[in-house]
Image 1 (cartoon, one colour):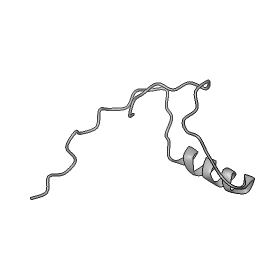
Image 2 (tube, rainbow, N blue to C red):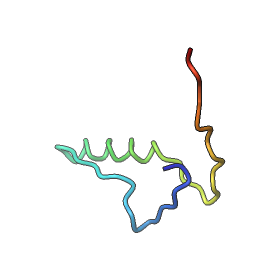
Image 3 (tube, rainbow, N blue to C red):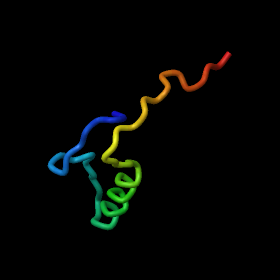
Image 4 (cartoon, helix red, strand yellow):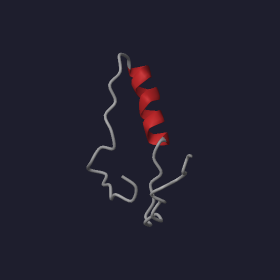
Length: 52
């Protein structure tokens, strides 16, 4: 969730792969999907776009 506190003691996700190389690629993709910061982010808009 946006703004949720994380800790080095808790995983952000679990990677399951058939080979170590695939696990390394999946772990890199998982790390790239997150942005970690010491400051709280702004609250996002609840409605991004209205269609129709």
